[in-house]
Length: 104
Image (cartoon, rainbow, N blue to C red; front, side, top):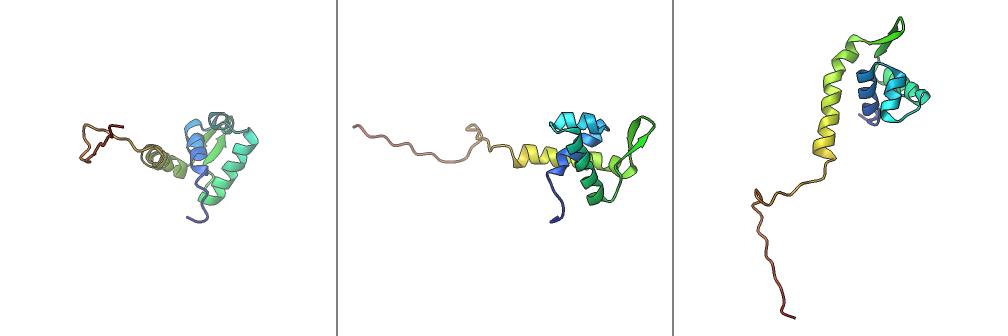
């Protein structure tokens, strides 16, 4: 894990979804050169081309296709369970609260 830049995961998800460097860059708010650089880093990290140009379009490699579900699951888990603020539901809480007040 020390050699993996986890900041690349949302970029990878965008590339896998859009199958276009330009559209993926737009989706995450990067320039095309920055997304292209991220794709190169992902290719080196994962040891796979991920996206291959066929004619005028990109297609996912077999490995990239297999990563779609796991990458989306990781990002969904991080978003909803790790980064989401804790919630409090008084209807289901078993905590005891004591309220004190002074007359002054």
